[in-house]
Amino acid sequence: MPTISELQQIATQVRRDIVRMVHAVQSGHPGGSLGCADYLTALYFQIMEHHPDKFTQEGQNEDVFVLSNGHISPVFYSVLARSGYFDVKELSTFRKISSRLQGHPTTHEGLPGIRIASGSLGQGLSVAAGMALAKRMNGDQHIVYCNTGDGELQEGQNWEAIMFAGHMGLSNMIVTVDFNLQQIDGNVIDIMSFRDLKNKFEAFNWNVLEMNGNDMHDIIETNTKAKSIRGDGKPIVIIMKTEMGAGVDFMMGSHEWHGIPPNDEQLARALNQLPETLGDY
Image (tube, rainbow, N blue to C red; front, side, top):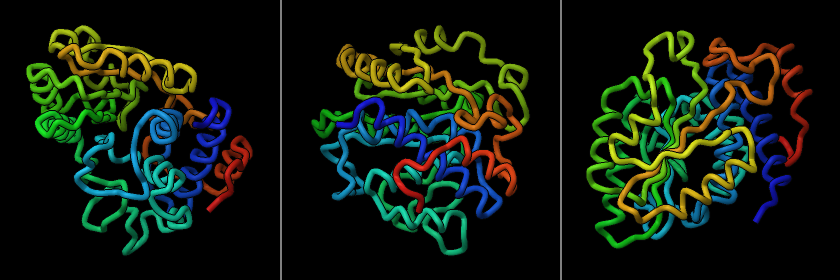
């Protein structure tokens, strides 16, 4: 099992992959991808029980993950490749014609690690709830993980899923909300405030935890706690505070980097802050 230092090194390489992928095709979403790099690295390299070499769509007898905010596909693809789902060299095909690595994850290309097409915001949490119910009905004790964006919670379908999961007591479900307070048009609070998110989830019969999604220690500790409180009849949500663009100083904290690729000079600046740790693709 990787140490905290090793996980941090992997996350640094993942960030390096992200900026290179988006720059190469001048298209994609670097900000949220960089912000979630620590969490997805910890999830796939330590937290989840999963089997990259034996991938199946059904995901029976292993933990599964749903990326609801599928526009942050660069971080997802990098972590999947780095954890063994497919060759790291395939990252060079990101968003190119006939590539399996489309701008939003899809299933018809048959990319290992992808179980649902996502990025149509608001749908992933519903799918994850269905997966969690199916696992319980099948006697599968493993966990369904799902990541959503905070701006994504403005989609009403999420709240139907939240109500359903709470009502059904899906305690085999751990959801993270990427709480960076940024969306494509500006600050989430200014666009459509959701007020007290913690109290809202609690009112729907969820256990609520909070963590710093850019602190590897806190990520591991919080998810360990989340696993320990499973089985009390409530699904679990972790409000994960992140910084959009984390790891690249000129991208941090600004909604402008939601979907803008770096130019050549900006790529060089970013890579200078992100030392190569595992080898580039």
